Length: 425
Image (cartoon, rainbow, N blue to C red; front, side):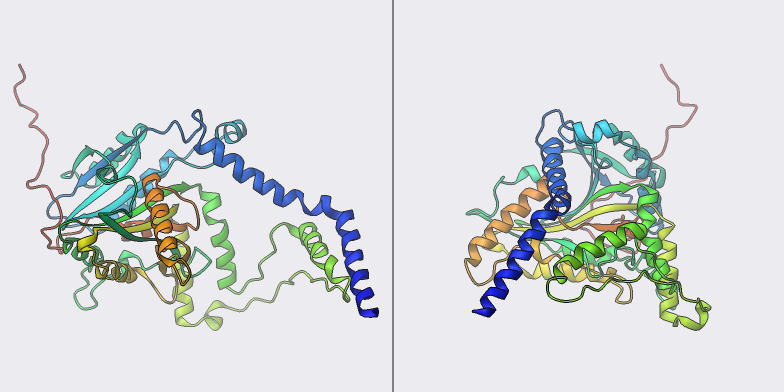
């Protein structure tokens, strides 16, 4: 009986405390829920919304036959895309849903053994994209084409088609650890670059009739102060410096008080002390060679522009010829961009198109249809990657002269400007 009374006393005390402080606890989560719901409606479902006024076009890039450059020109191309960044005023953010920068899409598509490069862009930025491509690849051809997605049924899987797909995420939670970049793909003896696109192109080129494999990157440029803020914190951590808690002393004390309210009913609350600055020692004596390499890579990467990136792939095939080994081969080819000492990409478990144990088939089909729809919308929900222009250039660029594949559609001859003395009627 005494034990029951003690439990009731504790619950009563907890209820009284909650009744007294609910106004302090609830506003924050309610604010975030309202913000998400409001932007979801305003930005995506309202006809007058910022997103609803988007007019898209799909450009197919036909690269030159013999590219003697590495991925560096594509890094310059991505840097040029950041020129579209603008500051949205408060009125626009809340009434039209303009809460992020305008997106771009770059997509690598394997279609029954043929490889295509697409850039999905807002019509108002078409000239920008074309000028950036021609500046780096004067002999390239750019064609305005229909979205290849529209060639397929709106609902898949169905009686004839099946798919497998996934979004990708970083292995390390801190996105400022970089992936392996193109300058690390060098042959140790000759010093020549081993083009990482070769492995991806070979998988796409092996696809048979009725088989398609798509790799999609949805890119949103990030303004410089925002893009390096977390990276500076990581640098301080790698250098062994004390990292100040964001928000300062007031926020620290407020959060500590909220956390300790429930503890007060069961024992003595414990309040954390702010971290004190430690005496720094020279980096050479504190860091191993690998740690120094990591620090250097992070510092160099922070000197680049960044994009919030949604990376996803879909393997689509006729049911009578659906071959899962292509999926494994392609995901395996993507692993070449991983660096075990820094960062890696892997399939995001929550987006993978499969089911477990109970109602496995129904769950798998639900996930497949959801992913198929998200691919069409170029949706960025869920976890995104934070990629620099250098990382993007490594992941998506036109293959150089060392990649010999008949799967790639390339220009058949060099294009040049007309001679200046050409007679004009």
